[in-house]
Amino acid sequence: MSRFWSDHVAGLAPYVPGEQPKILDLLKLNTNEHPWGPSPLAIKAMHDAADERLRLYPDPESTALRETLARHHGVQPEQVFVGNGSDEVLAHVFNGLFRHAGRPLLMPDITYSFYKTYCRLFDVPVELQPLAHDFSIDVGDYTRKRDVLPAGIIFANPNAPTGIAMGLDLIRDIARANPDIAVIVDEAYVDFGADSAVSLMAGHDNIAVIHTFSKSRSLAGLRVGYAIGSPEIIQALVRVKDSFNSYPLDTVAQAGAIASINDHDYFRRACQAIIDAREVLVTDLTALGFQVLPSQANFVFARHPAHDASVLAQGLREQRILVRHFSQPRVNEFLRITVGTPQAGERLCQALATLV
Image (cartoon, rainbow, N blue to C red):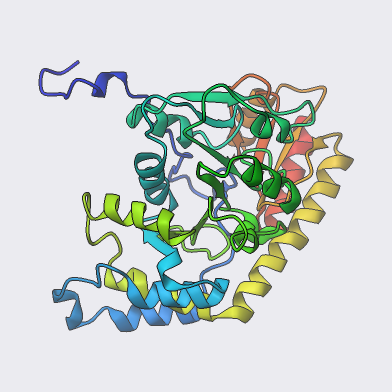
């Protein structure tokens, strides 16, 4: 431990992002990036925004972007918060909504691993709720009466890394059973076949959802994320943001995000292309003997009963194909595979055929 560090730094367990190596002829199926490019309208808008206006600070409230998102989701602008990627938005959620005098946060034991990192960073106690045997979220774990009121509830829907989605009726049950705490639904992958909990907010002011432009909008390099919730919840995030960084989104990012939202046709086609490719990939993996969990995300979670997942991941790497393997108990038998183009799926399955 360096003598320059703050006291808490040594105890942190930083999040480890998916590998981004530079390998010739690499097929990268490990970080759930969209294989199709961003909307051409978004690229043009960003190009047009890169002019002498960059000498000025961007709009700190991202007003035009928030208004665009509000129209898109059928809510009011004061219900929208934007940040530098959904990970920053999540950080503000943990800091602004979950720090309640040592009360525990409830979340699944198998989910997006950044949640545990934020619990350590912001000193939020956590009670992990085990997924059911089929890797679905057991709603009863979040609706039963408890002696101590939780600090909040967070889960991804569809969940990561499983890809399994929960129905809106079950999310409604969780929100109804916990009216006095924030229920945060991380919908990074919702556009690939699941239903958004935004539709539940009219009757449940404790629900907030988190979205990202990195997946379905194919703008991972732009770093734009946002939250939708009640004005009461959003104001907490604004107060945290303005105590940390008043200008999280630059002018070019705001322009590109607005154009992406407005290009409805391109968005629908790109999402449908992933859904179609996912169906083909599931069929081909099943034919190779893999067991594939039902996914409504832009990735699949698959295991082969006769082969070690870490060995398969290494074998694919030797063929210049990257997939994600997690060493966490219960899921260490699985590979998380990003859905790519049809050609990428064919190359992946040909490589797997040589290994299994």
